Length: 334
Image 1 (cartoon, rainbow, N blue to C red):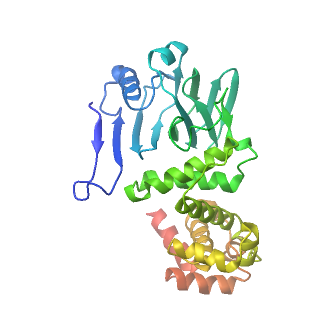
Image 2: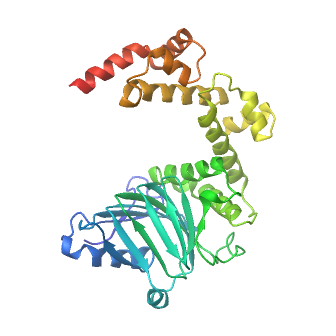
Image 3: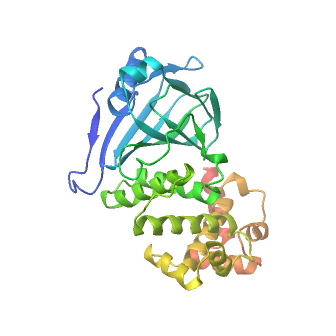
């Protein structure tokens, strides 16, 4: 199967360049060499091994943002290895940042081992041998940064993997921001957003490595906005949560915070309510919340009374919580 480059015919400059590869149409006996050849051409030279006796199933989309590349990779259980001979034969000087989205991962380099769960990130250098394994079906979003490019050339060289989940320079709100940035971009890879995404990623990874890179105003605003949204996601279920609490957490005035949200086409109050309603919707329509009463769902989503919850929910969705639950049950029954 030839590699495929995607672009929009109607709006050729709207999206960044995308290269795709998938093993679905490849004979199982030829999937490993196909996958290795694709990665050598588009990402990094490596060897691949199937695990659990299951033929490799994998797909990859590579997004070229200029100063860095993103790769959205999913597949069955497998291992990849970049040996010392591969490092010499197919050299590459990059820093990779792997965000595990689904599955479980293990990474070995320079005598150090890192275990990964969804939402965690490992940083590593491609000029040293490594092994990266996935014991079950997986998905990762990989950031490929040229360490000699502007914004990265003063970063320290890594002597082994850096597990960002335990790095005190990035807290859980920064980690949520990083996941939001890369995940949202691969869903909508617009060219106009590329520079801001690059600046934000370089800033977060630079901080994880102990540096303070210069970043654009757009990247600074995006990181502050996403950090605020991560805090809202964590605290919105508390009826006592307020905009003043968020402003204090962010270290800015409430007026400055409102201006920040206005830059992204929303208001602080709207975002808080949207988070509460979204969580309530999930609890009302999935098995996770089927055992909860309407009053319990109200309490878990930041409403002080069931009556307030029901009225506000109806105004937002056009149906009451009880009506939505009834509709959902009928849909699943069919």
